[in-house]
Length: 74
Image 1 (cartoon, one colour):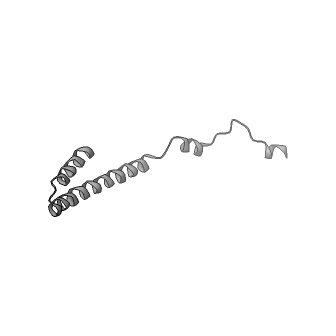
Image 2 (tube, one colour):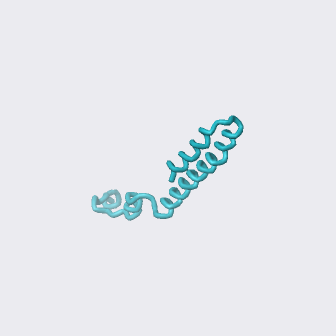
Image 3 (spheres, one colour):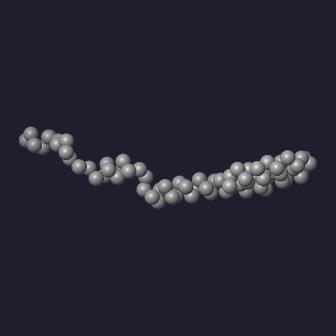
């Protein structure tokens, strides 16, 4: 009866070892891919919106901001 409730400290849990190693490779790859995809969307937003803004308001600084954002991301 006492052996049912006793827990040995040397008990091995392989699932806990997997958790301690961090996320699996595919999850890390998916996170990196989604982050780079968001950066690409921001780059496209800057490249399409800033020239339109500079054309409408006749401010060439918006095009410079677009090129600076491109160099900063790359």
